[in-house]
Length: 226
Image (cartoon, rainbow, N blue to C red; front, side, top):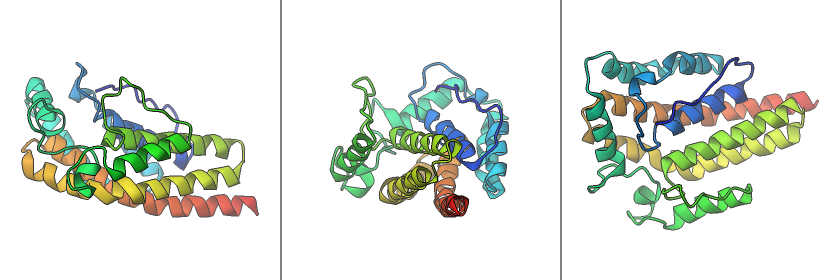
């Protein structure tokens, strides 16, 4: 799990949101030797405070509870693979088509997600190894749009920023918000490791709060145009 997310100074909501989406996306990249104990909760909390989401503390504490205990890093990696990766049958598939397309990979929702990426000039790498509706891919797409929104804001191109806000809301509604609650329910039922139950609960709550926050951000852009 790459821990490359960096955020030196938070000075606007778009930047804070982009950081959070990237932070979450990195947690679903296949484990490759980095330590779970390197999760940066302090900057995550800073970003959440900046956008007024201090109410999401409970699932963060749930994740921290595991890391503060004398747990096995190897066991955590094995549990991640068991839940989300394989090689055995995956009890909690981390891709949308499983939940909205009768458990068939690369069905309608995956194709729809792929079309959204293509509409923004993005092509999945052949080395990705994930379906286009995998949670890591979908979270990274929102991160990309949020980062582009930040670029538009800095250039005072508020029409473009509003277009990007709309794109984020539409993707959230059509994809992540549509299937993540079922993914969370299945994960919470399946694992006893609070690191992962807390992680998925946090994602679920954050997505709902962020969708509402985007309404406020869009209104601010409109006011800036007046």
